[in-house]
Length: 361
Image 1 (tube, rainbow, N blue to C red):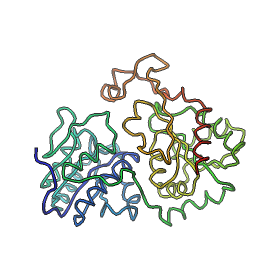
Image 2 (tube, one colour; image 1 turned 90 degrees about the vertical axis):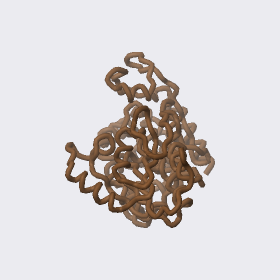
Image 3 (cartoon, one colour; image 1 turned 90 degrees about the horizontal axis):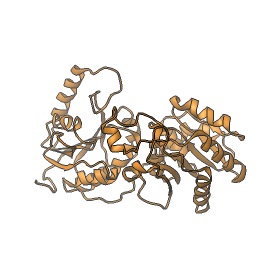
Image 4 (cartoon, rainbow, N blue to C red; image 1 turned 180 degrees about the vertical axis):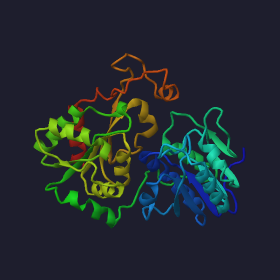
């Protein structure tokens, strides 16, 4: 298979329309493409929230375009509008992309999406019998997402620079965070207890105990964050506590959260998008990981990050040995429980990690 730098590249498309952490993991690959093709226009194809978060925050992307709802790629509503899809692809074909990268999973749905852009060369990962673009690598679940995206970019000759994702914090981010920052009297820690996957969520009582200790013994304020759908969880944690945290759940957009994180001393959270966003702003963090997801998403450096990993592999409710790749591929046949796999991480271990990270500032 041909690989290496492609001549006469004027326009590049990159498809990556999944979650917040997934976006952070693609930043080094975008920067590698920019360094290799400095005169090309790089167009990011993503979800609606990508446009405001990309604006002015990195030099590697010139434009962000929201893609239409597409089965297996992006669903924001309950219905696919095929006329909207047809109009979108007609516009994208008129862009005349030289390179189109699929950095959105194994390619069963995302490779056909990229091929429908009609680029000069399509590039991506291939899982099993997924359609194959012009240049491709096998998709293996157990590979770090940052390295996977860099390997895909390397198919067009892009060589990595920094493997640390970074995002600029704008004055407008701090302006949005100001109402929360005004409630804080001392140096503070941001605690984000939620997650889209309950299996990687530390128990609420653990967060309550750790946050009480931080406020009582470390002389710091704690800000609880989350999206609106996590408000009940955040309120339960606050009710379990003896001390009073600042509750910012549902009060900040992603840019506002960026502003808050950039002023924090530390973030404490599960393996979730805001953890990776915090590190991209230059913040420090303690992250709680299930071993099954550590290989794919564990931050690569340790200067500003302390990992706590749970090696629990059996569901505590049914005893099933859980392999995340098999769970995702055979959702109906494996363990059906959404119980936490982080129960073996104790509050004492979390507190020790927080103290160590704060002591290194």
